[in-house]
Image 1 (tube, rainbow, N blue to C red):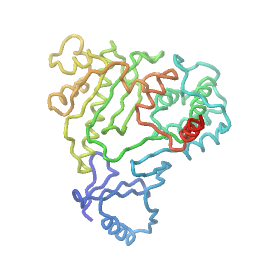
Image 2 (cartoon, rainbow, N blue to C red; image 1 turned 90 degrees about the horizontal axis):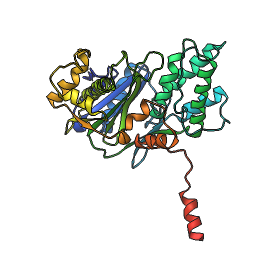
Image 3 (cartoon, rainbow, N blue to C red; image 1 turned 60 degrees about the vertical axis):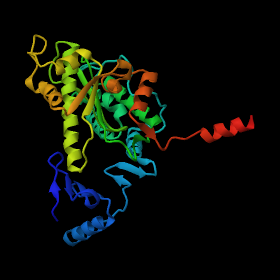
Image 4 (cartoon, rainbow, N blue to C red; image 1 turned 30 degrees about the vertical axis):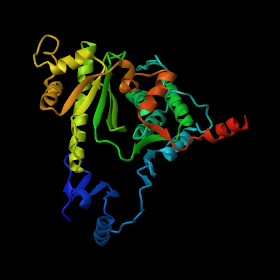
Amino acid sequence: MGFIQSKADPSLFTKGRENNFIGVLVYVDDILVISPDLCLIKDLKVFLENAFKIKDLGTLGYFLGIEAQMSDSGLNICQRKYALDILSEAGFLECKPVNTPMVPGYHLAHGDGNVLEDVTTYRRLIGRLLYLTATRPDISYAIQQLSQFVDAPTDKHLTAAHRVLRYIKGTPGQGLFYPKNNSLQLSAFSDSDWAACVESRRSITGYCVFLGSALISWKSKKQATVSRSSSEAEYRALASSVCEAQWIMYLLTDLQLSLPKPATVFCDNKSAVAMAENQVFHERTKHIEIDCHLVREKVAQGLIKLMSVSSSNQIADGLTKPLPGAPFKLFSSKLGIQDLHAPTYGGVLEDIKSAE
């Protein structure tokens, strides 16, 4: 039919431009189709029906365990049913909820505690929680930490995993919101926690990428090498953030979208920003791998713009370390997370005020 496969995402196939644009996202035998013209979607369904036996499920509502709900204001996605299934399987449906997925200041390590007799339970739980991070960036750091111990989990690791379940119990329907008429300004927040791993002294990279006000990508990951300074750790995190922003630009191009301005990358370490903007290799940077210096190249090309941000406004902070209750709540709110299934009390409060 003349579709072109995306080089940024091999699962994406596109055709046409503007009002004649149609995009097809394929995962094995599950397919999503988007187009401003319903006739194009109908023609595609007829073509597929002649080649395969297909089932039309109508407007997007449930896809690969992700629930989607569209309204006049935008699109909300969550994994409420999947989260409740995890809680039910682990026997935590009636547990007491907590406000944060991890205890602030608590560090996990290999050999800490007694090795579990049945390690498959822990591995299955972490595997399921990893998929839950598809719509739950608020638990990304906790799951990144817990996934490091699937080779030999202990009772303390399992206890930490159970705390994540208790946190999910309080917010099973929490998900992401994508507003309509959103701007096409790409912005990223990059952060790191220097030498955070107590065993290897490696740092943690955390970043989150927004398209307008909508969170579209995030990651919490241990860095591959040891950094000699906090500036170096931040610079490595910057390189990962820039790579992600570049990939998203390629993907947006395949979706026939062009960005009006360079992507803005925010970092709360002024030394790292200076290293990226300084073309001179000196003592502080000559030992860093060459691929990290792609940040300088993208800045020179005008594809990204580096900006300093205060630590208090660093949104990616919650992807590099466990936060206390109030800061964690602020971190979650800045990610654009909302819960359509949470009870609302506005009406009750209004009635009380009226009675008074």
